[in-house]
Length: 58
Image 1 (cartoon, rainbow, N blue to C red):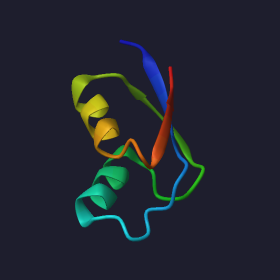
Image 2: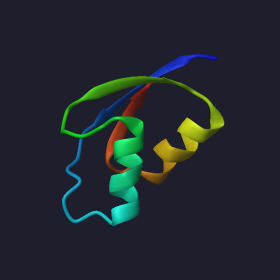
Image 3: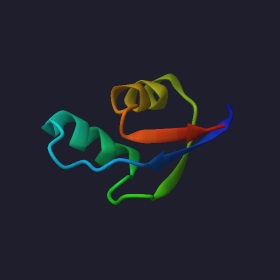
């Protein structure tokens, strides 16, 4: 599997609680932080849930 880089580009303020929980599960706790994950279906599903808050690089 390939590695993807996920960066939080928008604030989590005023987001629903489940989206905040998803960001925490991805390891994104502050703005402009970058984390690396494998592109498994579960990770891609979490990214799809908060796609308006993050940017993804392959």
